[in-house]
Image (cartoon, rainbow, N blue to C red; front, side, top):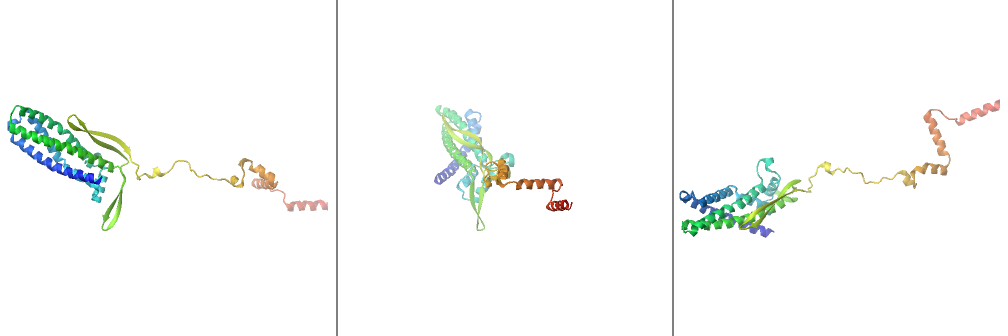
Length: 298
């Protein structure tokens, strides 16, 4: 994985330098032949190719790829954390496109720039077949051929980089930072709900076509609300009552069985409790003795 990414990084850097060189040659050829060929259809296609290459240059492709490889390789942990956190923000939140959105726009542009190249090459090949403007036709065809190969190869590598960065942004990571001699571990959690875009290049007739697949996923991260941690289901703890501890199978029949075994003290205690509650005291032992003495005197 690491060696493959390093090879892709070196290849992309080389392709971007060559693309800038070929774009400079095309820019010079268009400038020199503008007055002579500007009304022709093939030259209009050349102007479209130049316009798309200017847009590609203004998109800062090299800067986007450098930031993407920082996330993949992790050579600078602090910048990696900042870039990963920036991927959570969408344009509607901050007003700026994040790294993946910019890389997606560059991939779309690379896919669209091939069509005017092919149309310009077809029109100029007609001039070459008629032996018109031989020097101009041969030079432009060679430049367009090299540009087409470079653009298609950069598109394939850019799609690979996009999918790698997108998959890394959806995983929980622990990144080790070094601050003033202390090691600090920073945890990264992806967004809970995010729209995942997966890119793929499909060969159609004579060029690669960019295909986008989108789906919504919910990441299972540790950033949960407190309310989600509270369980609303019934408790699974089983409580045992006193009847179970006494060995009574049916708690409803406990009073009757207990009375039969122990006798009447329980009933007398219940009667005494009822009399105290009603406020009518029952006959005590002193009252009984006093009644017996009075009866003997008579």
